[in-house]
Length: 147
Image 1 (tube, rainbow, N blue to C red):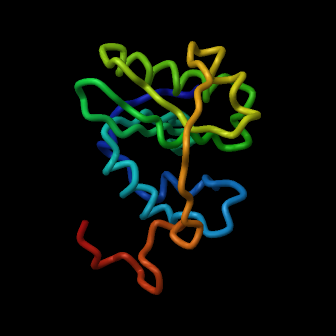
Image 2 (cartoon, rainbow, N blue to C red):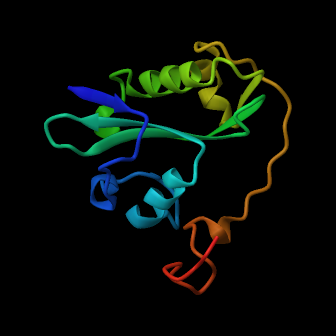
């Protein structure tokens, strides 16, 4: 059974080591992944009750007043097709129901999924710095980095 949580309390990097960021040439480490989640305004985790592993997550940045942007949604391959992603996004949207704008940037093939949850397509612009994909400064470990 998958349980959902909106807190990182008790979550360790080891629980995030299941293979997130599939297909990324330089994915964040579990430690950096935990920092990403900790720096997000909102997080929802899907945790396998039996193994205590995080099997999916979504994160958002928000001003807490008007706007939010869902930055990441990931579900481990073994858990796809079980509505875990839908459960994550529904819970995230529920936590942000008082906000005027909730935006998502996604690949075109994911538009039907988000549309089924009430989001509409719009125009947007993005900048991607693939050399920074790991979340670490170039040539550094990030261990001593202060943000």
